[in-house]
Length: 368
Image 1 (tube, rainbow, N blue to C red):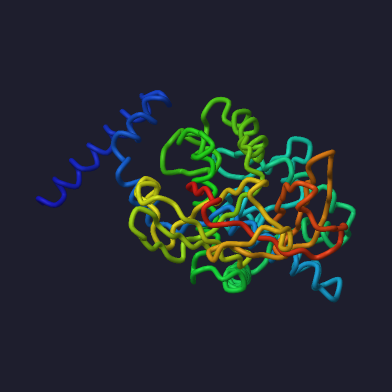
Image 2 (image 1 turned 180 degrees about the vertical axis):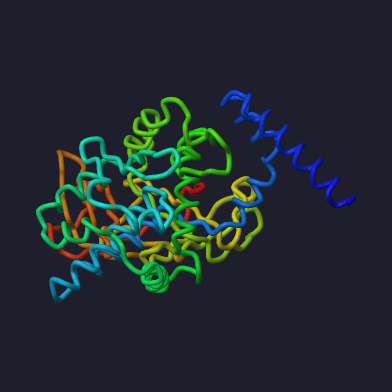
């Protein structure tokens, strides 16, 4: 009898809260959500696996290389299907079940969006470079067949992501459909999207009304389909990596980064900068080096003991009366720009392999 009384009152309280929630405007709902759940959201977000942009790019290159290595039409079709699913998880922030249920008529090529069924239905905009890349492949019969039905065994996609993570040297479990979805949400927040728009993009049902924000589709298209333009900077060379070690040396600090392409990079910064950036082992950083501070081996400038050495193929050479600009392409596809004076520049031609280096004191670190 007592149990029934409490259950009846609990149900009545829930109905009152539901009626109150429905009476609030969307702005009031979002304000209330941010006031009641900020600590919980931050703790949950910090506990989730995190992928850097460079790591996502390395995984994407692994899927592309896998497609290029297919030996039969049937094998190519299967690998293209997995590659396309990865792109939808990476850039669309889709749940795996949503990606597997997509059909050919769910693609809105004119707007660069995906139509995701649900209550309510939502449009997911994709970055324009990705849309253009996919549209160029529509002439491939194998890709068309893969795109017509992305349905496959979900465990196969999970195993493929795990295989990709191992091949790229990621920590176990870092690359998954869930981590790609959460990683996309972080990227959108870093681009200045409000929590309501991020929820609308992901189709989250946790907060009523967030998936039906007025003008959400137009706002998302405007922000997402123009997000890939890099921020302006005079530094031509940027490397992304994770900190392997951070050793204090008096007032200075020695930081070693490992990029997804396997380049071991050394930087020396002040201890104050280390504390300000909260640098520790395992965190992600971006390393910037200006083109004039890059050197080619044999240009008459001896490298210091802590220099970072690397090899690349000369892709382009431009010059004027005083300067010569050399563009190197590393094995992982990264481009490095070197600006040298003619008198210090050995003879080079496109297609040649060249060795280059930069000093640890020339590196500027920032959060990635």
